[in-house]
Length: 137
Image (cartoon, rainbow, N blue to C red; front, side, top):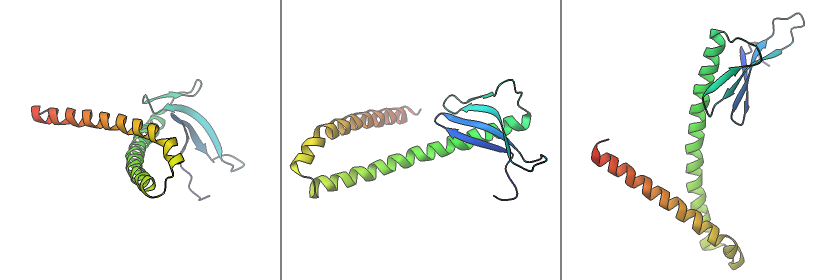
Protein backbone atom coordinates (compact mmCIF):
# COMPACT_ATOMS: atom_id res chain seq x y z
CA UNK A 1 0.00 0.00 0.00
CA UNK A 2 1.06 3.54 -0.60
CA UNK A 3 2.13 5.83 2.20
CA UNK A 4 -0.93 8.04 2.01
CA UNK A 5 -4.29 6.42 2.71
CA UNK A 6 -7.60 8.19 2.18
CA UNK A 7 -9.52 9.45 5.20
CA UNK A 8 -12.56 7.37 4.26
CA UNK A 9 -13.26 3.98 2.77
CA UNK A 10 -16.57 3.18 1.07
CA UNK A 11 -17.45 -0.52 0.95
CA UNK A 12 -19.87 -0.71 -1.95
CA UNK A 13 -22.94 -2.84 -1.50
CA UNK A 14 -25.98 -3.42 -3.65
CA UNK A 15 -27.91 -0.26 -2.79
CA UNK A 16 -25.13 2.00 -1.57
CA UNK A 17 -22.18 1.63 0.74
CA UNK A 18 -20.91 1.26 4.26
CA UNK A 19 -18.64 4.17 5.20
CA UNK A 20 -15.52 3.74 7.30
CA UNK A 21 -13.16 6.36 8.67
CA UNK A 22 -9.54 5.26 8.22
CA UNK A 23 -7.18 5.73 11.14
CA UNK A 24 -3.47 4.92 11.12
CA UNK A 25 -2.53 7.19 14.02
CA UNK A 26 -2.28 4.53 16.66
CA UNK A 27 0.63 3.01 18.56
CA UNK A 28 0.83 -0.13 16.42
CA UNK A 29 0.65 1.86 13.13
CA UNK A 30 -2.00 -0.54 11.93
CA UNK A 31 -4.97 0.46 9.83
CA UNK A 32 -8.17 0.85 11.81
CA UNK A 33 -11.43 1.11 9.92
CA UNK A 34 -14.18 2.59 12.04
CA UNK A 35 -17.69 2.30 10.57
CA UNK A 36 -19.36 5.69 10.69
CA UNK A 37 -22.36 5.53 8.33
CA UNK A 38 -24.50 3.60 5.88
CA UNK A 39 -25.50 5.01 2.50
CA UNK A 40 -28.60 4.17 0.49
CA UNK A 41 -27.82 5.42 -3.00
CA UNK A 42 -31.32 4.59 -4.32
CA UNK A 43 -33.09 7.10 -2.08
CA UNK A 44 -30.10 9.41 -1.59
CA UNK A 45 -30.01 9.03 2.18
CA UNK A 46 -27.25 8.24 4.60
CA UNK A 47 -27.44 7.50 8.29
CA UNK A 48 -24.82 7.54 11.01
CA UNK A 49 -23.83 4.13 12.32
CA UNK A 50 -25.10 3.46 15.82
CA UNK A 51 -25.09 6.51 18.06
CA UNK A 52 -22.48 8.38 16.02
CA UNK A 53 -22.66 12.01 15.09
CA UNK A 54 -21.22 12.78 11.68
CA UNK A 55 -18.86 15.75 11.39
CA UNK A 56 -19.06 18.30 8.61
CA UNK A 57 -16.06 16.62 6.94
CA UNK A 58 -17.83 13.24 7.20
CA UNK A 59 -20.96 14.63 5.58
CA UNK A 60 -18.99 16.35 2.82
CA UNK A 61 -17.02 13.18 2.03
CA UNK A 62 -20.21 11.09 1.98
CA UNK A 63 -22.11 13.54 -0.20
CA UNK A 64 -19.18 13.84 -2.64
CA UNK A 65 -18.92 10.05 -2.85
CA UNK A 66 -22.67 9.77 -3.48
CA UNK A 67 -22.48 12.32 -6.29
CA UNK A 68 -19.55 10.51 -7.92
CA UNK A 69 -21.20 7.11 -7.44
CA UNK A 70 -24.48 8.25 -9.07
CA UNK A 71 -22.52 9.60 -12.05
CA UNK A 72 -20.59 6.33 -12.36
CA UNK A 73 -23.78 4.25 -12.20
CA UNK A 74 -25.41 6.45 -14.84
CA UNK A 75 -22.41 5.97 -17.15
CA UNK A 76 -22.57 2.23 -16.57
CA UNK A 77 -26.29 2.15 -17.36
CA UNK A 78 -25.84 3.79 -20.76
CA UNK A 79 -22.78 1.62 -21.46
CA UNK A 80 -24.90 -1.47 -20.72
CA UNK A 81 -27.49 -0.27 -23.25
CA UNK A 82 -24.82 0.25 -25.91
CA UNK A 83 -23.59 -3.28 -25.18
CA UNK A 84 -27.17 -4.54 -25.57
CA UNK A 85 -27.35 -2.97 -29.03
CA UNK A 86 -24.09 -4.71 -29.92
CA UNK A 87 -25.41 -7.96 -28.52
CA UNK A 88 -28.61 -7.66 -30.58
CA UNK A 89 -26.44 -7.27 -33.67
CA UNK A 90 -24.35 -10.29 -32.71
CA UNK A 91 -27.56 -12.25 -32.06
CA UNK A 92 -28.90 -11.28 -35.48
CA UNK A 93 -25.70 -12.49 -37.11
CA UNK A 94 -25.85 -15.75 -35.13
CA UNK A 95 -29.49 -16.34 -36.14
CA UNK A 96 -28.68 -15.67 -39.77
CA UNK A 97 -25.49 -17.68 -40.04
CA UNK A 98 -25.13 -20.29 -37.30
CA UNK A 99 -28.37 -21.10 -35.46
CA UNK A 100 -29.89 -24.50 -35.92
CA UNK A 101 -33.59 -25.29 -35.98
CA UNK A 102 -33.62 -26.57 -32.39
CA UNK A 103 -31.77 -23.51 -31.14
CA UNK A 104 -34.15 -21.19 -32.97
CA UNK A 105 -37.15 -23.07 -31.62
CA UNK A 106 -35.75 -22.62 -28.13
CA UNK A 107 -35.28 -18.82 -28.28
CA UNK A 108 -37.57 -17.41 -30.98
CA UNK A 109 -40.75 -16.76 -28.97
CA UNK A 110 -38.95 -15.30 -25.95
CA UNK A 111 -36.78 -13.10 -28.12
CA UNK A 112 -39.69 -11.91 -30.27
CA UNK A 113 -41.75 -10.99 -27.20
CA UNK A 114 -38.83 -9.13 -25.59
CA UNK A 115 -38.13 -7.26 -28.84
CA UNK A 116 -41.83 -6.44 -29.29
CA UNK A 117 -42.01 -5.11 -25.73
CA UNK A 118 -38.86 -3.02 -26.23
CA UNK A 119 -40.10 -1.67 -29.57
CA UNK A 120 -43.46 -0.71 -28.07
CA UNK A 121 -41.82 1.22 -25.24
CA UNK A 122 -39.27 2.89 -27.53
CA UNK A 123 -41.97 4.02 -30.00
CA UNK A 124 -44.16 5.39 -27.20
CA UNK A 125 -41.22 7.25 -25.61
CA UNK A 126 -40.15 8.69 -28.96
CA UNK A 127 -43.71 9.88 -29.66
CA UNK A 128 -43.83 11.51 -26.21
CA UNK A 129 -40.54 13.32 -26.86
CA UNK A 130 -41.71 14.53 -30.28
CA UNK A 131 -45.00 15.79 -28.86
CA UNK A 132 -43.20 17.65 -26.05
CA UNK A 133 -40.81 19.14 -28.60
CA UNK A 134 -43.72 20.31 -30.78
CA UNK A 135 -45.36 21.95 -27.75
CA UNK A 136 -42.07 23.59 -26.83
CA UNK A 137 -41.73 21.91 -23.45
